[in-house]
Structure formats: structure tokens, C-alpha cells
Image (tube, rainbow, N blue to C red; front, side, top):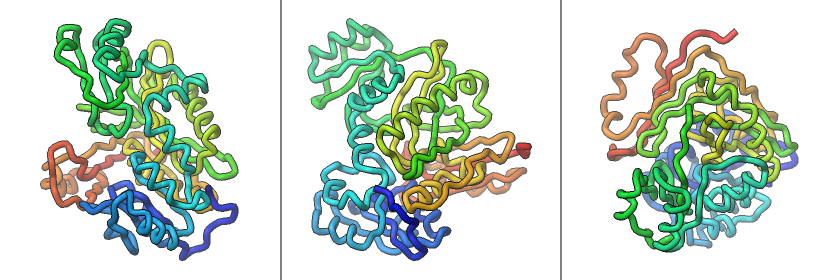
Length: 360
């Protein structure tokens, strides 16, 4: 739970996870006078160089988690697949957001049912626990569709697109609980990113239109276009209800499809989000700074967009090896490389944000 009084400078923020989102959170924390420490299993933890200390231990190491928590004044996370058992080892009073947000977001079935109860519309879906379930889902929902693991998938991992009934004959239940979703016609994909303070104050950033390839976000642009702009308010209503129902503190992201029948909920991320990276240069206050402000009990910063046009693109795989060439472009490209050591195919290595024109 968030602090009732603001944390003073010099307090310690704990971050579960060691990736680029944790890295950027730690940078914003430092700007506000806070110390960050991280916790994640051993690996290429790019947040570690920014943190004052970093615990490289397994998620099941309760003594290490206890030692980590004992040094923190507040603890947050940078990705939603932190095992719940690890979160349970941390005193609830330190957590912001609260654990329930992870419980909902980690299970696609629970997540969809949660937002449906709040009035959201989802693509048709069915729970899949066997080959027989998958066969029934294909008969009822049809193709094209997508089979997803109910837990642990991100950036297109744990997903199998089924384009036709003929293709479906070669697909088998992967041995773990899944969800089958029918694909829908949509004009655009967009995100609603908000920040909520402990007192219930909510602020929204402008929604970007997002482009995905292979399940991974590759580009976010503002303005998002008329298809998105006509549906943002309805999507924001669902996002705010979600945040309020969870008593959420910090940055929360919901992804939607803009369709002929209104916004269609896709998925939720209880954290700062790739599609909000443009806010570092493009908004009055970035998503990272506002997350730190919220969990530390500080006043929220403004979320107004500062430029008429914004284009954020991910730098993936070996494209990072030549990314410095971007700096020679006309205008003001803002390059962020995450310090990852291995440029694997499909791995997010950084991003670049290009801005132009002042917004009156």
C-alpha cells in the first residue's frame, strides 16, 4: 500500500525485476532524490547499474527477499510476471501497487472477466484445458483466432495464430491452460495509460496509436488518428474503473482495439508500458516519474502532451549496433539504449522518440 505521507529524499525504493522499465524507473527515482535497489534472478539485469544495490537471487529465495524488503521504504515492480509467491514474501504495507493487480493481470481469463464485470467488451474467447476444448472453441468461435497461454506470455511469446480451419487441424493443446480468442476487425490499436495516486486522483496521458509485429510493439504515434480519438473517452472510463476497483497506486496501462462497435479491451499491464516511452520527452511528466511520485506519496505531475507530433519506435535486435547513426538525423531524435549485452533477434534493445511542432 502507498505511503500516507510523502517519502523524504534519501528513502529507498525497491524494484522487482531488472529490465529496461526498472532501469528507467530508477533513473526517475534518482532525479527525485531517492535511492533504488533491485531484485531479480541472475541474468542481464540492465537496471542493476542504475540501482544503488541489486539482489540477484531466485524468486523462491525467501531469506533474500526478506533482506531486500528490509532495506526498502516502498516496493514496486517493473513487469507483471513476478511470481505471486515472491510478492507474498514482502510485507503488504510496502507494496505499491497492491498485490491484487498482479493476481488479475497474470491470468488472462481472470483479467477478461474482471474488466467485463466493469462493462468492458472483449473479443469472443474460451478457456482451453485440452484438445477437446480447443476443438469446441474452434467450432464455436471459428477462425481466424489466436491461442494464448493463460499465464506468462508477453511480446508475442506463448501465442499461436490460427488463420484457417485447415491450419487448425495441425494445432494441439500445448499442455498448459490457454485461452482461445477470435480475431476482430479493427481500425487501430491504442493504449490508455493513467497514473493514480493513493487519494484516488487519476491523470491520463494522450493515447497513442500502436503498431505490433509478431505480437511485439514496434511503434507508437501521436496524434493517434480519428478512429482512436473517437473512442478514447469510453476506454478511459473502463481504465479508471479498473484502477479504482483495484485501489491502484502508480501507472496502469490498458490496451484496446478501436472497432466499428467501440473500444474492445485487449489486455492490461499493471506497470509503466512500452507504448508510454514517448512521455519521457513528449509529456509534461513522464510515466516513469509519475509512477515514482505516486508510490512515494508525492503530488502527481502534469500529463499534457508537449508536441504536435510524436513517433516512438523500438530498436530491436542487431539494429541496436547501428543505433548511434540516428543521432545524425535532422531534428531532435531522442535515443535510449538499454545497455543490454546481447542483441538477440526480437529483443528490445532501446527506443527512439522523434518529436516535432509545439502544441499550443
